[in-house]
Length: 426
Ligand code: PSV
Ligand code: MN
Image (tube, rainbow, N blue to C red; front, side):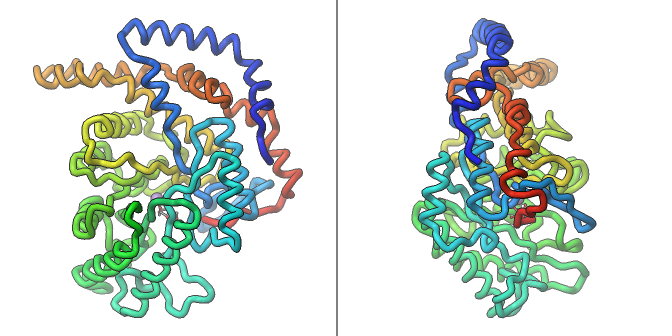
């Protein structure tokens, strides 16, 4: 289903008066504080977060999966769903594909369809954490790290194929996440698997086109529980440095042990010019993949505060690739993604409101209280009218979630696709 600007404009009429009042009040307040609102609004409008192709259906755990109905059964339908998200929010104009899940016969047709909906192809993801039917060797004991050179070669070749597909779609980056690791002491020789991984990544790196980037994800545990070959940002950073200037670390919010100071990791990587990409989600315990900002919104704001600072100060760091990497087990995936997009933009807008100069001044005079208060002041600003105004100016919805519900989109998708459809992916 395709959502038209007219349908959205009609929904906006219902909220128009209240919105103008709310925005007018906020505009006066912020302008009075000397904030250049137009600059902030331009940055918010430019922000595009990629939606992963595998998150448009209901997810599940190893215990069960509860389908919502109307789920997209192929990539074209997934692109249409992202089109709906983008039409409503104007901030979801990109898709991230996972190969081989998203292989199709006709890539030009796919590219064409996406471009009519304003959707670009962000980072491509390879998959060497599952075995595919036709592949000769198993990844049960690792892929790029494997002690068997034939298995490593197969995993390298897969990544090369992903790059080739990405080239056809206009993507400019490859994200490698490795499930490689061990479940028991003695299973792997730590040094050997790391050396093998670097060697395999070097082969992949060599095949990267000049204008591409390689993003290396890290994760402390799962699916392996004793050791992961790339367990932390330090290992990813080390590999990226050894590979060269086109390789970067990718931070996935769920890939940290509880209470890790992620904002400090962001700052360190940006200082070194090595933060390439970002996967958004939220968690209570581990890689829970919950809706962004649903558990620790203040931590998300602090992370964005470092991202904003880094984007301003660290010109050696490229503009990061953003992606939502959440799983929707309980809610309608599209509603969940709308909530996540809103949470990301909320944190970003609040971070843009931080008076960086005043914070620096407070730090210079060791005024701990003031420095903290300055952050809190930005965090406590209700930026919802600002986000709504940015969307309105781009013909998006004043209230995306309300519009989604009032337009009965899930029911329309069920009528169109059926009640029992199940989306491929995780
Ligand atoms: C692994 O947990 C991960 O974060 C990687 O980004 C994968 O590609 C993605 O989730 C989907 O499995
Ligand atoms: Mn991820």
